[in-house]
Image (cartoon, rainbow, N blue to C red):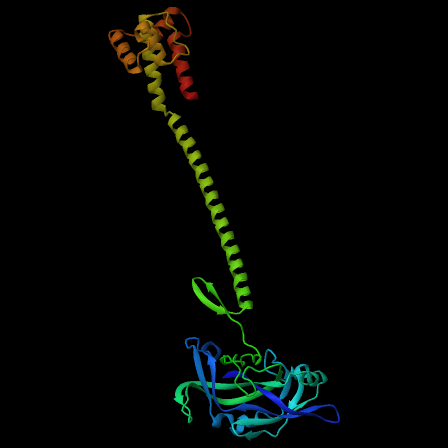
Length: 361
């Protein structure tokens, strides 16, 4: 079901004793009328010839639908109903609907002073608001004119006073008809002006719409851009937080690994103590005055070797010390304690200190 508007001039207007304006107007006609394809739901076609055959225009049901319909000033956004009649109606169509050649003629009464004043000031055309079924089918009229669609089941909703119709003095189908949605009828648009459309590119595709549509699209674009920016910022912050946490965990793992490397088990401590005691014993056997307290094994070896170990790498010092002491037997610490009559000796103290140091490490 399609909704349309027709425009026709008001002729022979007269005033009654009560101040009402009455007239007979041509309200519809038969024949071909042209539309842009987008105006009749076919944007794939540049122009559509719409045929209004006499059997549709002058059918009994269609003619009857004119009677006692409201008259409005311009077209309302939706069809006139009982809920909106009081606010919109300025007059009424009479019941004597007749055929006048290729036209439908109806009586018209205007009861609103502002509407009558508009007619007196030059608003002398009317535009019909109606719905119909638009069947797309190719054909040729009896007069030989080709068409691509036919109007059927025309039903009138209202007549509107408009400043100027676009088809001159003859009634015509309004250009802004829209397809029936299957629920409520589409809005009935003004028959006295074209809807100016502009093209805007949306996601790489051209879209034809009005200034209001462009404003709505731009607003939605702004909201989408804001949402995208917020999402990008949130993702960046999240990635930074994850990276910081990973770095913190890696640092802790490194500390743990370092601590693990420094921890000596019991066997390692025993080996360390034994090695130190052996080095100290050999060092004391060669040089009883050598200082070992608080010295590392490497330092003790270098002290025994003297200048021979100066500026030499640790590997050289280890080899030189082994050669120098290969035939040396370290003194028995217990024998020395007994011999000295002491409760402890240098070696015992060194061993104790080494064990304590290892334990602390």
